[in-house]
Length: 327
Length: 282
Ligand code: SF4
Ligand code: SF4
Ligand code: FES
Picture 1 (spheres, each protein chain N blue to C red):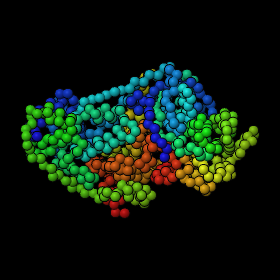
Picture 2 (tube, protein in one colour):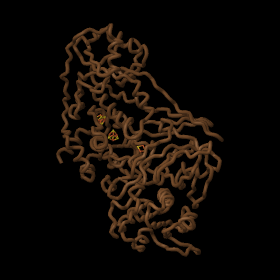
Picture 3 (tube, chains in turn yellow, purple):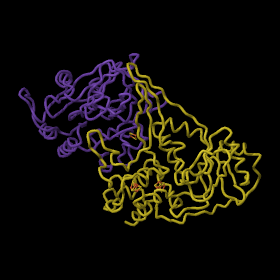
Picture 4 (cartoon, chains in turn green, cyan):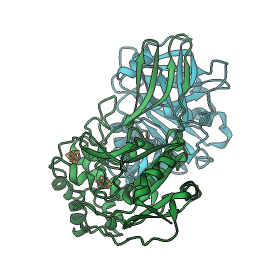
């Protein structure tokens, strides 16, 4: 099916009737996902958003429960099941949702806060047309033209968007948009990344054997421990849990944390298993490229290039991969 | 690795704790207290297996992961050493006050695989807390296990935890020996003086049909493991627990990883052979 680009606003209006629709936009000069305001034109092309849409399913601060202190304690869980649509999310960020699904929905426990949002979100993905010079998703095993876990996959068809439903949720979307859609459409699906990285299938296993390799001294030296890389990364999911008290009441919340901070693993008695940036950067690279693969069978780096683009110290995971592949 | 049990009593949301009342506080040492907890309607909050953990909170201050050291019909207990702001808040609690707990978390000691074996429990300082949950379990199922040796050491006689168990309850048990050592004695101390690793070597255990459960400060674990290996124990037969900083307790927040493993979920119980497989970041 295809949708005329001139009908995009009309389509978004239909979707926004019973859900919050998030679209690529800009706030204070930063390209990121924004709540659609009901009228603005949406540009699905150009470079990917500078910030990933990860906060829509995993907010950077999320309230968990309220409590009352005093002689008898009361605890009241906060339950939110917002109906949300992420419109125009790219294949790399779609793969990051796949990573999050593994973490939050599998292995013994289901994370209720994530699963409630995940169940109620509709993911309408957009094939990439304009990779940046730091994009390397196809080296990480992705196809920039397709997101297999999307509800609806859109691709550019010139004057139209070519739509295909992959799930029941996706079919419902196409039905809702039926009045604006027509048969046919020729989708362009020939986007390829310009940056190629030597991510071999053997690398996760090889890295596991390189824990004590001298490479770590060299590749970790520049890092200043600012955590920008983890903040802009669509797959980084570490969080802290803390409380916010107001008199005898309060709220327990969780918020994004970063393994790049120096006190991240420091214990109450003072012992720290990762005392210097060498151990911390090693843990980050290993987690992205080896540990996660061992645990969940896929890479925790989707090749979006955001950390490469934003690191103030020019740390570059693609250069690390190439170097590690060569030793 | 121990067996995994994820029967969490969390009413569907594993990150939301249940309220419990502190029904008894025991001052074990100058800086360790044991807190007995029960639900406000007089029930056991959950039934952990030996070695499992609970995330316990002084509501409004913070939460921390502690081993459940004992349980009864309608209560569970954790022993907490004063080391920082949160644990100080625990030490200020009075009997009758309410706190909150979620769990049980983590794997547990392999109680099945230990059946029919002679057991050597080795604890250092507060490290006796996780070991105690298994000692109690074995005492309750005494016929399933062979001879039991309990070797325990602390800095000084005042720092010995669970004195009632050590000096009264356990020595009375059938086929059980309790050996205690302190780093420094005092005027009244008549027992052994010396570090745990050396004492273990002195006791000259033979590895035959034995399993060792070893918990304590990292340095003590390191030297005692080396001593045990020298004495001929296989690494598979020496079981220990790991400590890492934890937040979620359910393998999500990423805090407690060692390589691809999460200590809160895949641990805290590992044998030495399994620890050798993990990156050296403990
Ligand atoms: S963005 Fe760069 S400098 Fe900052 S923590 Fe990450 S690697 Fe280190
Ligand atoms: S590690 Fe860097 S390139 Fe990989 S997904 Fe994260 S931000 Fe993107
Ligand atoms: S404490 Fe969160 S993953 Fe272990």
